[in-house]
Length: 616
Image (cartoon, rainbow, N blue to C red; front, side, top):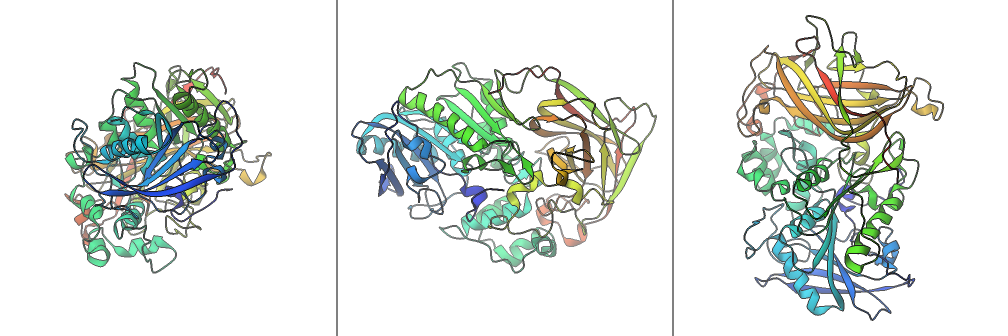
């Protein structure tokens, strides 16, 4: 892909704020940088960079991004040279970049993703630090009294938190690629299953020192390295020695308890207090769930039309690239990053400079397959009809419900030989050579031959099928173990002979996928062991999509019980806390998937019959 890569690129793409042009393009050529230590209310000083355009004497609005990360790309380039913001820098903004407490050159103690006290405006937290920063900037820069904030990933979360207890001068925000809930669907857990490699490497990178630190792996292919660690209990014994606070927190809070609830931004938000533009990617390998969930939650309370969303065909932060035309082998048909920059410019232009009419569409979402942008007055599209796609014998899929009295397919899941989540070698998550950014669009033929998973597919479609909204798996399954993981993937299979690009013939493009840890089938707070052999239903949200399965393509569903080392291995023997399982707890188990009229496993697709939504 034509992506500029930097160390920790999947996170650090959370590039720099946004400047928007004035009504007249002044063709600025240079910004001057100033570095200051801004005092917070408790006396702690935070390292801050301020970029001011040369040659403009009129007061300007301020755009802020706050981050724990270093200068690897954020703030190094002057705004007029930064591909992410240079189309907006021409009009003039004051750009401000600040490191949060305890990171890089900032003073204080770093607490990774600490909670926010929504009701107490006097407590010191990330929202209060942003408040104090804005207060200082209003007094020490030539500004127009209007402030915006944005950021991708962690900086996006900080943006969201600032909008929960906003300074009066904060007039618009854009949290991008933002976490909604760390346990249910973002960085650290998905539906209770632990995101192993990402969490291991990220926690170390942020907490081993004030800077950003790379774990010193002893080999290149980390599939074997993580497998050789053994159970999660060995991580502290062999490597972390209880020196990484987040890892200890993961271990002590394996269920959805107070620790996770109070750190879930989605639990803080309700009525938007300032205009908010959520941004996310349908193939975001880190926080796909976040923007969707946050928008949905806030939409219930939005009475001023403040709540808006943009969803594109991107991995984490790809919309900040200079050129986003492909993701892996998937071709977007246009530079979607340029498209986004225009939308972002319009957003901040209006709220901070009064340019434009402010008539923003509720949702602007890219439609993969057709490769066009669509505008929606509601998101998801209310015209979509839930339509069930059923599993059948002989690995077939059909919209007809099974009529058989009984029917099952089985496979043996062995924790000693887990299915890789991407093609080996599994490189370190954040490295220039890593495929971390593109694994969610990786051709799934690399696993469909394995005997420890199941694949089902339709006949070639006789017409286009548009799917817009939430995809939900209804899985009827049993196991010979007392715990299990269920991974479900919905895939677009290209024609046997794809004349547009022969290299993509029979390509298996993932469209929606996720994992569910079976112990949490009744409650994420109170896990329960499974009864061996008992059939149970699992309802698994596979997140939102906006995709056209084209005529001649097939739809495939894959089911498996491991996704390693993205997720930890389930011992398949119930233990109260998997983080303290022993190596002897890991057992083989036979997994059975049911496909009959009584237990009809299916995928619920939100099908749009007449796709007449306005294209952008």
